[in-house]
Structures are given as structure tokens and as C-alpha cells.
Image (cartoon, rainbow, N blue to C red; front, side, top):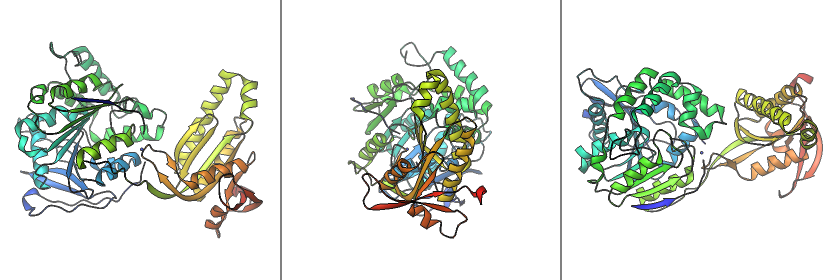
Length: 485
């Protein structure tokens, strides 16, 4: 086993279109084509009278079949920008296939035929592989799918050309020869937590603790959980999953295998991943810092490079995605003097209230908070009008806290980075515009003003400025709030 320890990072993207296509497996006579980078079409493969939902995206020559186990929802994955971005990145070097097993997401309920959860899951995966003509895909196993994928490999070893295990396990439950597993009392506690909190922010934060300061992601993840299954069904699934022990399969694996984990995982701890890698011949093991169970929000750039190298044999890296966006920067005026006057405790409490207002207004106006550090914030918006309205709303809301801010805006093409941040010259210009603004200002570049010619916004000329590190001289304007007209 090869051991590597890696460093840290995080991800972003946009919603796609949605269309459903019924496509029974028995009617396929050729390999389904790859679809666009937007929301892929939903297809349905047939198992008797049941339908199993699956999607195909990407354009690579190798097949990569994703599964997160018994909990998933194909459509909702694409609603979260960070996840959609990762799926597009995977699709840049592979044909990505994903599915909802029966009893979850878009698929039909599990049949009442006496079959076990494992048996039905294996049928679903095999059916989707046949429907997509993915004869020898690489399986990317995440969350609770590790034991299920291993059971599939045990039964159909010839159908798989490689394995990637990401933040998963071969066995959840402790055994005399497996102290890495969870005790029965720990499993009972997890089941109780799931029953009481599934679909709430508490459960979302448990699965994605690295997003604890991102309420928009937590709210989406809680909704995602509610869409996948009810708390009772999830708890029952957990009980059944805990009884699956696929450790006996590990030594017989004869395909290239990559095992990824994070050092602070709770439900699927790193020790269980190490056990897998130690018992799979020639497996490569990589441990990242972090605690998020999904691969979508932490260490994303490194994870994508490792997966690309595993699938294609090389790290292409991929050019950064670019998008047109309005950037909004704000900071608190005289923050140092105010902090010294209030003292650390009172200032921290005031900053917390400031941060809650900032997040609420950005979300209310359709923006995305990119960064928040100390007394400054950075957000992006789809339109300059919504960013301007948000900035004015922030002035009004923060006035009640006796906090004065200044705001600077610019519109331009930005880079959407793998760690979820945003970069490029447009961001630098926006930050420089903020530096020229004063308390109470909503200052914009001429680019913003030109885009909004003919709009109801009124612009007051603030002269031509040199922006540090930015070529040319820039006319700047202050936008008056709409209510003053």
C-alpha cells in the first residue's frame, strides 16, 4: 500500500436544465451519448416493472460510475453549485454515470419480494451498467457505498476495471479482529441522531462540518436529505448497512485501487479507510485533513487531480472555469477604533450580528458569500442591480447596529476556482473600487454604470482614479439608493 498525506482546500457552479427521458434497458442497442455540461437528462433502466433512475454526463473515453450508496437524489445534486462544479470536472476526463437505487431519489420503491437491501442494490447497479453499456467502468464509491461496491466486486469481478473509495468503509461495525469499527452503542447513538435530526441543519452540519459557517449550503444539504428519504427509512438503512461486512473481499481485489479519506471523519473514520487500503493488494492510500464526508467541499482540487490521474494516467489540471459576475466588497468603517472602544468580547458579539445580517441580505438578493474575514466581506451576484440593491440594504440594516460600512462593486469575467473561491482581474478591480469608497458609499466602476445605462439607478460622478495594480485610469461613481428619487 502506498501512503500519501496531502494538504487542504475546498469548490462552486450553476444550476442546469432538467428533462426526463424514459429509457428501458432492454431497448438500448447502442451506447447512450454523453450530454452537455448542464443538468443531464434523467434516464430510467428497467428491472421488471421497476425503474432505476440514472444520468450520464461528461465526454471522456473512460467510464466512471459514481455511487454514494443507499442515499442519493440525482436532480438535487446539480442544484448545489459546488457539487455541479465537481461533476463537470469529473466529466471533463470521463463519461460519468450516476444512479438512484430503488427506494431513493427518482427511482421506484424497493420491491416487496423478500430481497435484501444488498441484493436489490446489486441488481440496480448491474442494471444501470447494462443500460449504459458500461462493461468495465471504474467505480467511485463514496459515503456508505463501500461495502456495497465490495459485494458487487465479489460477485462480478470481471465487470470492474478500477476502484476509488472516498470517505467510506468496508465494514461499519466493530468486531474482535476489527477494533476500527463502531461499537454497538456508537451505532445506536448514530441511529438515534439520524432519527431525530435527519433533514435538519444539525444533520447537515454533521455530514459537512466544514460548511458550518455557510448557512446556504447547510440549508440546501438539509433539504437534500429530506428529498432522499425520511428519517425512519434512513435510520433503518443505517441499521442494515451496519450489518454488512465486506472485509473478506479486500484481499481478492485485483484491479487498481485508490483509497481516499479525511483525518477527522466521524461516521466513516480514517482508520477504517486505512484498514481497507492495508488489505487491498497494491492499493494507494491518501489522507487529507478535514471532516466533510462528501468529496465536494474540502480538498477538492487535490482530490480531482488524484482521480483524474487514476482514471487517465495523467494530471491535466483543467483550465479554470470563467463566468460573468458582479463582485461586491464591503468593510466596516473605523473598525479598529470601534473594537478598542468596545473591548474584545463586545466587539466579537457585534461582529457576529454584523455577519448574520450580511449573510441574510446577500442570500435575500440572490448573491453568494465568497469570503468573510474580520470586518470585510466579498460576494458575487448574477446582476449588478441585485448587488447594488444588496449594498443599500446592508447600509440600512447595519445602521441599526450603529455600524457604518462602505461598499465597492465591479462587473467582469471571474475565475471559478476549485476551492470555491473566485479570482481574476475583475475581483482585484472590485477590491480597489472599495478602497476608493467612503462611509455610506455604494461605489461602482464605470463598467457597472455602462451596463446599467437606461436603468432607474442614478450615478453620481466621483472622478477618475488610479487603481493600484490595475492598468489605466478608472472613472468611479456612487449609486444613490432608489428611495431617494
